[in-house]
Structure formats: C-alpha cells, structure tokens
Length: 161
Image (cartoon, rainbow, N blue to C red):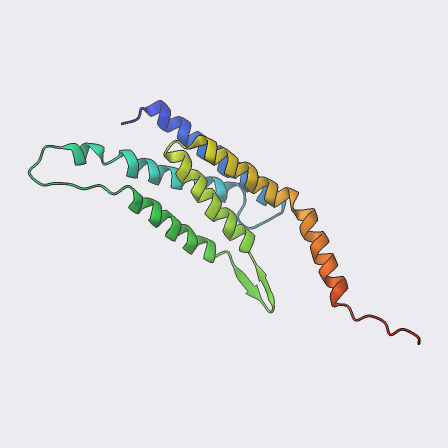
C-alpha cells in the first residue's frame, strides 16, 4: 500500500503533465484544451491507482474464497475508453479530416496519467516533453513539407523549344 502523500504527488504530477500538453492545444485553439487534457490525465492516474492499490486489502483477506486481482485490465480499459473519446474528436468535412492530433494527444495524456499512477515519473516526463516538442517544434517542418508537396503538385509551365 502506498501513502496519501505518494498518491497526492502522483495525482498532481499527472495533472501538471496533462495540463502542459493541454496548454499547447489551448494555444492552438483546439476543442480539447487545458482542462480536457488535465482531466484525462487525472482520471487515468486515479483509475491506475485504484487498480494497482485499491484492491490489495480485499485480495489479501484470509477468506475461504480466493480473489484474483488483475491490474492490467484497468489499463487496457483506459486505452479502449480513451480511444472512444478520441474517436469523438475526429471530424470529416469533405476531403479534410480534423481532430486527429487532438485524439492522439488525448491518448498520449491517458498513457502519461497511467504511467504516473504507477510511479513511472521519468517515462511520463520524457513522453510529455517529446509530445510538446512534436506538437510545437515540428509544426514549422510540417508546414515546409506541405508547401514543398504543393509545389510538386502544381503543373509546370510548358517550355519554349
């Protein structure tokens, strides 16, 4: 069993990391922003804490009935639930698809919350940093690639012989 301070630290770290990714989404005026990402990380962290530590007493009781606890089931259900939530953020308008990055960030934030819940702080911090760099730092590269692709699609002018 872990102490209340450990739980508090894990929950606060999950909230902070989720909020940091949500802040970037908020700056880009995306529908799922600061609060949404923070709440997904918090919920994921709490589900993980309850799964990993909440059933210890029941599983360890010396009753005649054996109780098995599979902590991985909650993790898999978090992935499924966030997939459903993320799917709701994806919209198609004609040939354009919107919301894929938002869905992906919600999925990553859930994983960050899960990692924080079990105490994998370094992996949660590293993934948060890489996510923010990919969202913020790769945007100029993405625009450059898109401009280059548009140039190759434009028909070239016929040359004089």
